[in-house]
Amino acid sequence: MEGRATAPGAGTVLNALANGSGSAFAIDARTTATVELDDSGTVTGEVAGAPDADTRLVERCVALVCERHGGPETTGPTATGGHVRTESAVPMAAGLKSSSAAANATVLAVLAALDRAPPDALPDGERATPAAPTRAAACRLGVEAARDAGVTVTGAFDDASASMLGGVTVTDNTADALLARETLPTAWQALVWTPEERALSADADVARCERVAPVADLVRELALDGDYARAMTVNGFAFCAALGFPADPAVEALPDAAGASLSGTGPSFVAIGTDDALDPVAARWREREGTTRRLALDTTGGIVTPEHHP
Ligand SMILES: Nc1ncnc2c1ncn2[C@@H]1O[C@H](COP(=O)(O)OP(=O)(O)O)[C@@H](O)[C@H]1O
Ligand SMILES: O=C(O)C1=C[C@@H](OP(=O)(O)O)[C@@H](O)[C@H](O)C1
Image (tube, rainbow, N blue to C red; front, side, top):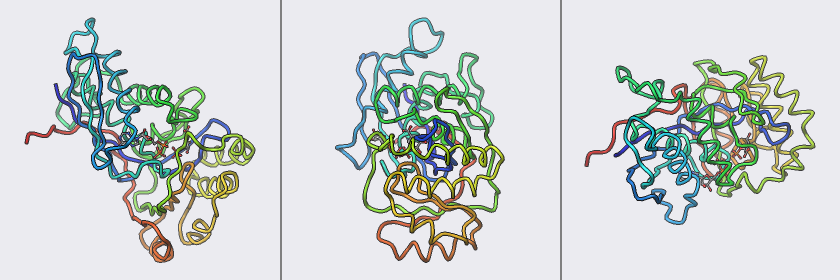
């Protein structure tokens, strides 16, 4: 029983570590998960090109989806274990939501292997089985697995929903509630600068973030009004201050970019705007050490893909 799926990473509009509300937009850098299920009762995982990577999150995703959708009471195939392998264009622990992309891709791949792929994750023309969960429900399973694996502070339903549904989402992570889902202007792209360092979200100074909650409340209002670009700019300055990151990359992005922010708990920065507006920002960010990438905004979200047949 094999399944394969992909899901995108995302950039931050509002970091949820201050007031529990968050907002993020999907970017065209994807993680692919390939799973093989069996009745062994054990789950193993591997990350392509990173033999020492922490695979607990994706292994927990496989186990949890098998528990909920692959048990003997289901009408479809059953499974209790298996193997998951991820391949990713989203750098790990860089603020670009690698954990959400990996969890969503894995959950969808397991559901596909169990013949339970969400209808909205299937290619055109393929029909879902009646027992299949929606993508939003599948996303909540990934969030539950992330909490179990200890890789998140709030559950990060903001990042997970943007990755699973595509576009930009606003959420209340304290209730895993989706408050808004929209698409950003089609002419906009994202520019992403990622320095060499890494910052695990589980290690973030949450107490410092909570101090900027009044600013986060303002960012939530801007986001719920649809003013995502200004929302993320305000978010960036507040969280740079709270987490001790220099705000220089955001200053270098303005006023050309429509918006710019530290992404998540860093260290990456993201800017959004038209291609022309991002040109001078790209030139300035390319003088920095690290990687600067221009990426399309993703509106597709998590999808099931054909399996490998080597
Ligand atoms: N491709 C992947 N395959 C398996 N697990 C992954 C992958 N990418 C990320 N993870 C998991 O997510 C963790 C990083 O999460 P986090 O610190 O929140 O960073 P990010 O901001 O990139 O989501 C990793 O330690 C690992 O457990
Ligand atoms: O663990 C969490 O609950 C979160 C981690 C942060 O993202 P990163 O994982 O990108 O640092 C933050 O932006 C998000 O709103 C919530």
